[in-house]
Length: 367
Ligand SMILES: [Cu+2]
Image 1 (tube, rainbow, N blue to C red):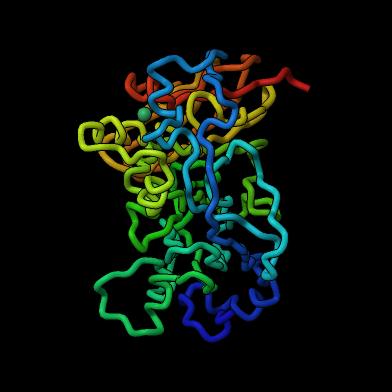
Image 2 (image 1 turned 120 degrees about the horizontal axis):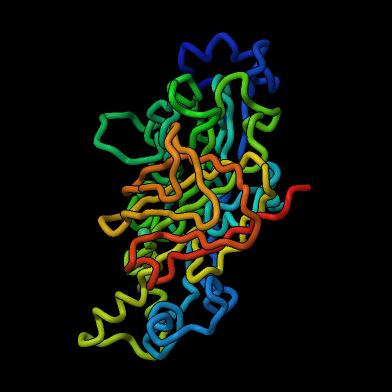
């Protein structure tokens, strides 16, 4: 750890001595996350069926999920951020919720805290962690840039296989909720060596910053009962870092006449890395204060309109049951469900429904 010697923003400097012990006099903490980049086989449809309707896949759907001599199917080689309990990287930390799927761990902090993101690269490709919203010096940006910085300030640009690097991110007021936000906001973090390939390969996660004074000890917002995360994204496996490896394993490489159809089959219209309702259902109860963090990245096809059946949300004081995403945007929508049942939760763009960007959530009766 290089924390003691690194430069810190002025607003944090006063509390630094205390922060090294965990808490400052004002209650600000250093929150450390131990995250490995690891390669995995990821199945976008682990249940093998279309679960929003409860049916077998039809011919249009098998285009995206069925393996074949020259089709990868629903399981792709990917690389993910996986959280561990400590710096030994021996024990994987349990996930906040099964529906998080392919997303990296939820990084959390309260305004005034500092985040230490210890990234260990256990994969075969160079990776980084580049955060949105929070404060970073050039040694913690996690992206190579033509910025004239020195060797020491560019170590964050590319963490090579086998290396470990600690990113230090400040959480000033401007990283947290604004005047019209609720008690927390959500940002993305993602790998940014080759941003397009890295993110399509799976290196992306959410970060929640809670307003000062509104956080529980674990930095979750005090005024919310449950939080869920939804990453609506057309993950383009044609842009994967591992595409060539995956093609090499096929019985037959797709020929030129088949190129367009092959590429189409690799466009995974997913929520948290799941297609066709395969995402484990977020579960909540009638009357609970439920916060949905909704996000995307991607290209011009990543114009998504997440839609909840059965219940409505408030977003910055506006009532909605459909919200709007553009590439790399994030939003917060609050729901107090009053209608119990299992409900559809899907992107409302017609092409995206057909291609699998669908899920469900479950509202149980009040306790
Ligand atoms: Cu969509």
